[in-house]
Amino acid sequence: THVVLTVTDMTVPEEIVTLLQAFERVAVKKPNAYMVILGSGPEWKRIEYEMLNLALGSRVIMPGALKEEEVSEWIQIADVFVNMSSRTTGFEPTMIEAMAQKKVIIGSELSPMANIVEDGQDGFLLRPADTDSLAQLLVELFSGTMPSFEIGQKARDKVTNLFDPRKMVEALHGAYRQVLSHRN
Image (cartoon, rainbow, N blue to C red; front, side, top):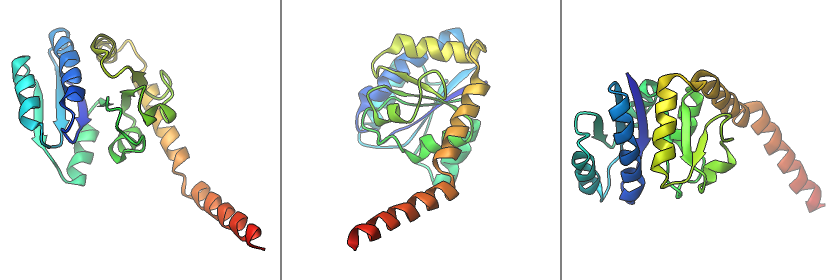
């Protein structure tokens, strides 16, 4: 089984509809692929309608908004974490968690994620409405023609390097020294 996971506030349904349209193509080629959409919001019914309209009811799970621990469990189960929103800050906790758990990350090249994810190295960046490329990438990942494990490992390495407590303390200490030196 292959699982695609996304987390959304369901305020801009087009972001999820694009993902659903791409996943429809994947589901035809990969009968053991599933999608999980976590979150809730004002456009829940429209997203559910689009999912059912694409005949993906048995392949898409929409458990709603969950507690942090439950989200972490879904990330653990997933193979791929997708966030095609251009509204992301880039440091979304769920994306960081997915990278730390060695998941393949797919995001929008128009979002701040592009400052974190190096396309093709520790994740992938696509145009937000490019359903063809997204579907093709997911099929390749699920077919084993992409080095998913290596990409996931590089994602984890990047996150552990970015959030290394020792480096963070040294940077904070350096910033304090700089502020104090300018005071005198």
